[in-house]
Amino acid sequence: MGSLSHLITTMNLPPQIAGMRASAGELGLLLASWCDQNSGSENFPGLVAMLELLKAQFRRLPGTVEYVPLTITPAEALHIRVRPQAPIQLLFSGHYDTAYGITDANQRCEFSLSGKMRGPGVIDMKGGLVVMHAALEAFERIKHSGNIGYEVLLTPDKETGSFGSGLLLAKTAKRHHFGFVFEPARPNGDLVHSRKGTGHFIVTCYGHPIRSTGEQPTGPNAEATLSEFLTQVSRLPDRLPGVLISLGATRGGPTAQDKSAFADAELEVSISHQSDCEFVHTRFASLVASFNAREGCKVEITGGFRRPPMPCTTATETVFSAWQQCGRDLELAPFSWTQAQRSSDANLLAAAGLPCLDGLGPIGDLMHSPKEWVDLSSLVQRAQVTALFLHRLATSEIKLPTRADS
Image 1 (tube, rainbow, N blue to C red):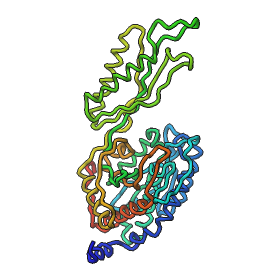
Image 2 (tube, rainbow, N blue to C red; image 1 turned 90 degrees about the vertical axis):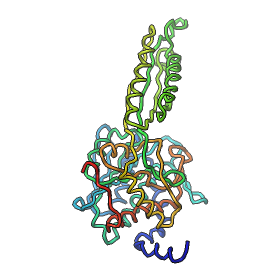
Image 3 (cartoon, one colour; image 1 turned 180 degrees about the horizontal axis):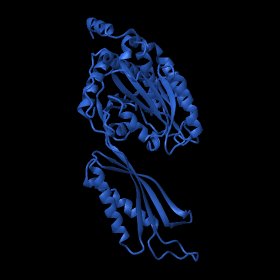
Image 4 (tube, rainbow, N blue to C red; image 1 turned 135 degrees about the vertical axis):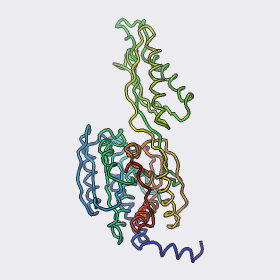
């Protein structure tokens, strides 16, 4: 890049944003301290401890800080509200629970010489929370920050479906012009323009138990029925491209010695369009009816879709274009955006009418595994993009699209 263009780019950056790179090491250490605190979705004492760590950091922002009780789960959300009377209102969304329980072997972070860090939740999504906080703290030091008000909402149950926080997310979405979700960027640095909808189902099959005499049951075998049922379920995506069905845990019982009487399996279903829900429900019902028509056979399906698809909209396209330009002006590696196969809380916010840009967290991969990693340099880089976008929004260099329901 020529020296003149570099000079122009540098002059357009507020010093508060340009100087953020000096804090890169601090951000890595902060992330390690957060990830070393286990906050698995069902580790409620761990979630309480994590909530205290987050409060200590986010209370450095102006505004009110509170814990919000949720339905279903005893865990609480962290809510920060800054300048609710400002003309522009934004929502910053994230979750602080992880997929790693208290008994999981992956409990501590490890730094590597390659500039990466491995550990539980480094990318999903405590790294995103570090990016979010660093960006907002830098933005608050900029002259025109008073033109933007915002809420930060950090929830404790995303990994288990956001059943407790779903209503709070939908209610909060109504108060804002745009939402920013700090789930991880893709491994190549891309953001997320849309997400598939997801559903969770349990298939239960009942059969005839083995007699105490040791004779084989005369009726249907639950495990055999389940195996046949799952084979037919696996063929459903062939009928509708865009539908994905993944097999989760399977169980048999009621005892380890008798799996012929009962067996069940978890199914995760992803859909590209809301209309796909009807197809899935109809096909499941048809399959259940065909199996139950057999003498002595009983199959049940429970569950449903918990997050609708998040589409790419003209509003998100407009904001992404400006976001991408901020990355170019910061001289970061080029990034684009793509559809994500997994859902996030952005699905729920979008369903409530709030346009969202997702995947704003750092770069990393292998979430939910012992090898989950984050590129440490991307923590400060992605925070700079967010802070620069907010600065330009506050000075009217960037304009938000009008919200459809406002």
